[in-house]
Length: 260
Ligand SMILES: O=C[C@H](O)COP(=O)(O)O
Image 1: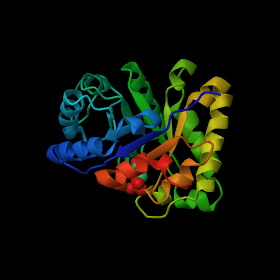
Image 2: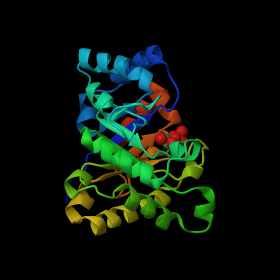
Image 3: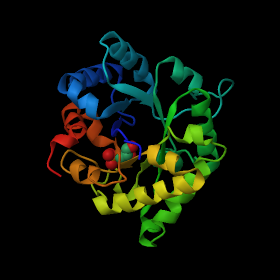
Image 4: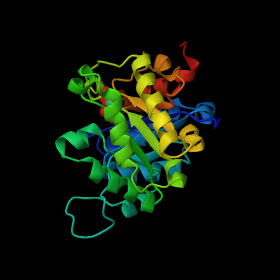
């Protein structure tokens, strides 16, 4: 089985201007050492307007923090006012791009076809998608959370080859647990993350399934990360609110030093 290196990614959402971004990444870099980066990959996902400042800091100080964007256009260039392309994100040194976050699906009507087009756009420019899937409260209450998340995965991976799929990061984020303080139990997280991995094996093969990192997201904090990370199919976390506090985010990144 592939040894999957954990990934803790901080989705800042629409928080922190470029000056605050510099201060936050500096604090994070100060709080984490080589031994932390040896054990865990650490990424920040700031707003577009912060990316150039983060790039300058990361490159200038040779930081081991990597960064990415929260969205990208499905197109590579053209008359698409307000959009940002994968070409631009690759040029600015992004490693990751979040795709299909529930807030994009909800507030921008992004459907599965668009999510799939964005995944393809990311791969055209060697960006690693952090593909978000997860159910809302009503779906969970009806007991359809696994089927719902698997259907989102299937749709997002249409036309994606096994070679590409091997590098994708999938984030399971139950919508009812995002920003609500309502964290899924470690067993809830494992149930869906495990099902997602089985589906990857069905869609591709065992090698792909065992290579893909599957994250949990939804009210992750330093106080609950260790239990979530103890689950066999959870390889990291997509952290929202707690990621804009560098001290708290650093503690989350050091989950392996905490009791489970
Ligand atoms: O992308 C991150 C998720 O939406 C989780 O956000 P949260 O940690 O604020 O609940």
